[in-house]
Image 1 (cartoon, rainbow, N blue to C red):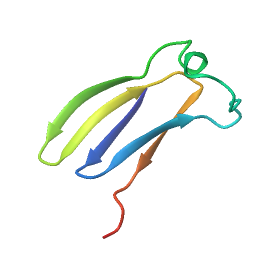
Image 2 (cartoon, rainbow, N blue to C red):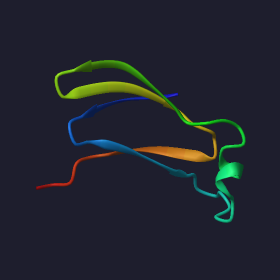
Image 3 (cartoon, one colour):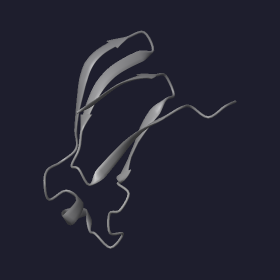
Image 4 (cartoon, rainbow, N blue to C red):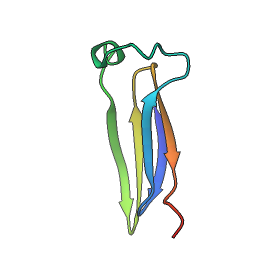
Length: 67
């Protein structure tokens, strides 16, 4: 499980991992289970969450676009 804190307007990105066959279907990607997101805490404009996903998927932190 990856545990991240995100501020207002920040996000995460979930996508197929490197080396994964691009012809895999969604059923193939999720054959070993779903993505599970658990919220641990939320204060002000920040949330702490855990993300569990099948090994075939990568989870990346993304920052808000510069204004």
